[in-house]
Length: 82
Image 1 (cartoon, rainbow, N blue to C red):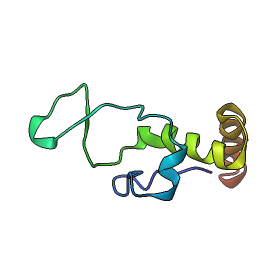
Image 2 (cartoon, one colour):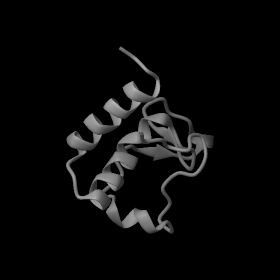
Image 3 (cartoon, rainbow, N blue to C red):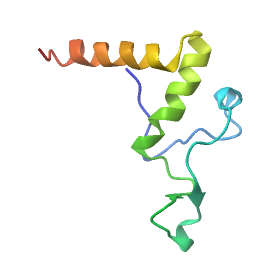
Image 4 (cartoon, helix red, strand yellow):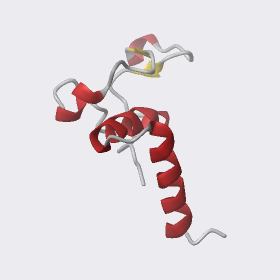
């Protein structure tokens, strides 16, 4: 399974895994300049699971699609969903 550590611990430029992110997917702005089209800078959000997926897929050398399928199957097994 994948997780984001939301709302804390975004993937920062100083983190070792940052080198695996090609680019930031989401646009961010300072919280003092709130805009509903942007995320709040420095705050981790659940939607950033895509960035986590990108990093893990590159580390494991599998496609993001394959990793998403594996994560989905693991979630089904963990929660015993039929």
